[in-house]
Image 1: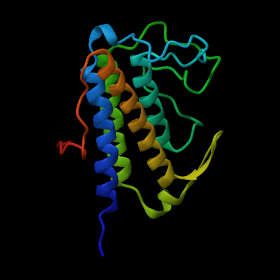
Image 2: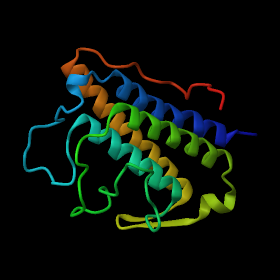
Image 3: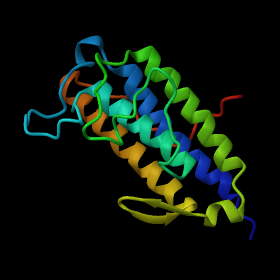
Length: 176
């Protein structure tokens, strides 16, 4: 049996990224700063606003594709706020165009990472404060993280706007 695992993983991971992209694009301006919940006691570093959940998802997508926190830096103008609870917060929300550009960068990086994955790279141990996993398992964890936040944003869209983007079955077949 010859199963094209890289293709299958990309189609599903890419679908999770497409779900996040669709939620980002569907968000009306008046919802961009909407709080996902109204509990003021939420941790200071995590702003439960639509734009920040998108950023949070992209930041960790990008970081987990490297397999390590050490040496990671998101592209400008983004900050390392996710790694440091006491770090500075963005002075103002990132705009859609910035996050769409970051999403496209992450989508491309993810696809290339999966396509070029070797058995040795898949077995590499990745250590984080929350635990230790192989890079292959980290890819699946990363996909679940993106999908979970895309679902969270789609729930908010459904509640506040009355509709949300449809489910993506597989990654779009886009030429790169």
